[in-house]
Image 1 (cartoon, rainbow, N blue to C red):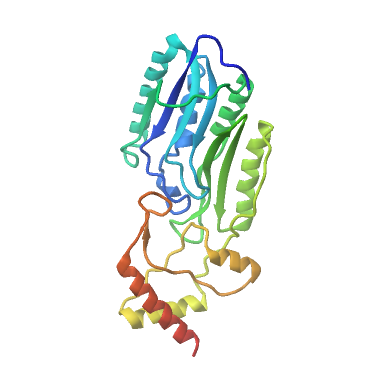
Image 2 (cartoon, rainbow, N blue to C red):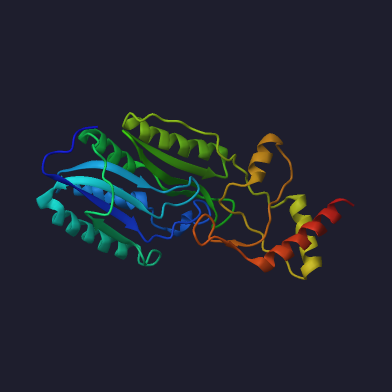
Amino acid sequence: TEAIREGFVPVKILVTGLQGGHSGLNIHEGRGNAIKLLNRLLWNLRKEVDFQLGEMDGGNKHNAIPRECDAIIFVASNQVETVREFAARYAEIYKEEYKFVEKDVRIEVSTDGFTAPSAAFTTGLRDKLLDMLYAMPHGVMAMSLAVPGLVETSTNLAVLKTQDDKISVLTSQRSSITSRLDEICEMVYAVGTLVDAEIRQGNGYPAWQPNPDSRVLQTAKAVHKELFGTEPEVKAIHAGLETGIIGAKFPGMDMISFGPTILGAHSPDERVHIPAVEKFWKFLTAMLATLAK
């Protein structure tokens, strides 16, 4: 870190108003990533304004698309208005780019009402961070060739946190094909190495490929029709499921996944459709009774 330059004052920039959502189920909808949007603004701001970066924080879960991200920067007092105008310009850019999916996106700039850090990151570290975040992939990387309309591989730039003199970045990758999952993880790893980042990788969710010929699936379809009088709508989803973990430990096990209807997963709007819970329970007990015969 380095000392705050003489005559520089703190300014907080916040990207907010985004939907967020599940990093698997909603990743194909083109929703805005607050970390990406704020970073893009700062990456370009440094061309026009000399600023120090004090802190930058956004997102809070590895499996959620970031809804908000804020940064505290330090600029010369006569540059504050320039920052406001620059942010307003990008707010209009984002409103135009995301007008079909993020109607409430906005950028707020303030000079008070927050606690500014006592030091700033060096210019070198600031530039490495902004470059890395700009280059970091986010979103759909490949669509499934087996199931039309299904996302096969994606990555989520999920969390950005400042703690003392360090900045941590958390990303999350998904794929129904193990080799493609390895590829996107390697791609993210490579971006980190370009800026000499310390990188740690977890195990995550194993891939689980859809099997339309599953015998359990055929049984489930027959039970559903007998119980409710209609054919069930069978879907493959781009999300981490317990079946992936079980399948990795017991290769070849025939499995399906089902449950009550959940809306707005991993967002403040997350909710369950209550009538679907009773229907799910009836279906589950009927399935178990059939399989036990």
